[in-house]
Image 1 (cartoon, one colour):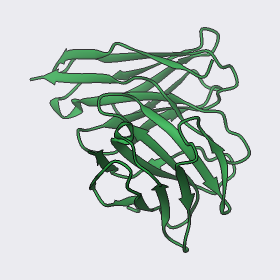
Image 2 (cartoon, chains in turn cyan, yellow):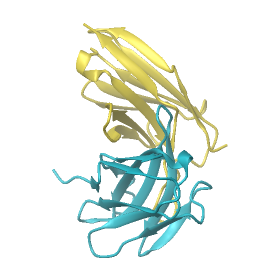
Image 3 (cartoon, rainbow over the protein chains, first blue to last red):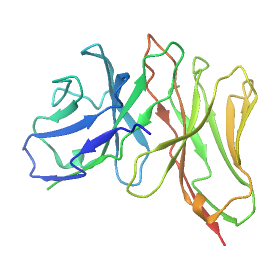
Length: 115
Length: 114
């Protein structure tokens, strides 16, 4: 069964450093999302992406964040200058391009630890 | 208005019992209500979902009940098993132009005791 994959599974970085989190969505999906989950809290929407542009972003997704689809398979989230409060699990999700299809399928996540 | 309120925060059920988790929302524009199951260290996995044009959906031991007038929906796990022990999140979204951000509830940690 196709699944969303994410790398790395765990990233440790120092405050102020740039990180890039990578995702490979399910191959026939064209809607992509990033969510984050601070330890013990609920999952929060960050950004949605379609047709090589951001379709919606949350208040969390400030100028330090960016997303990109550099090729036909990868979808990346970049944090330019990490802060301690960026420590969280980051989940990528994707949806199929089907009229009325709402399902979002999540990857296993990347645990980001900012020290 | 974008919030989804979930209760209880934690739930302990004996094996074979019924687990019930409730969610409430305010935004009447929401038109998709999924439930996700999450095991420690894993991503949320889509369990079951419902649209507001039906009041109930059943898949195996999992049932969603939906009350549009009360703006509430719930997950029922029949014959709960220890393997069901996980965190369950309800969510809601409004389909908009082909994409739909999910608004998650706070989660319910379910423990099923043998």
